[in-house]
Length: 72
Image 1 (cartoon, rainbow, N blue to C red):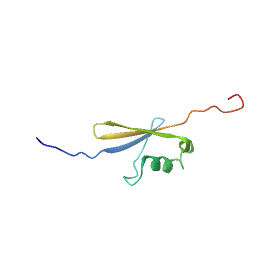
Image 2 (cartoon, helix red, strand yellow):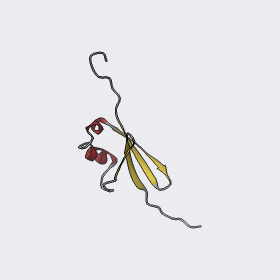
Image 3 (cartoon, rainbow, N blue to C red):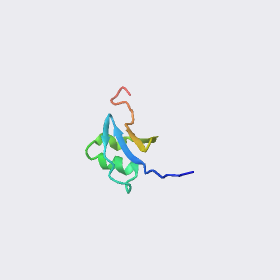
Image 4 (spheres, helix red, strand yellow):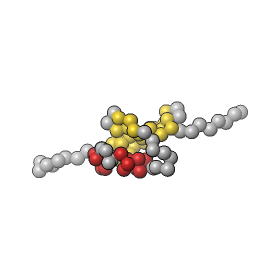
């Protein structure tokens, strides 16, 4: 019996876009915070995942849905 250890590759997605993993020192929330400078809507997003397929762990940034305006 052989046991092999595979390193998971992290992938981050939001609204059809893929973001590069800045490194294992960053937690998924840290990655969200890092990219929120370019995508301000990520500041209120939650992190879903990971979903693991093969050797890829995919985290999704999901925007919080909310109503705007006086009719909410």
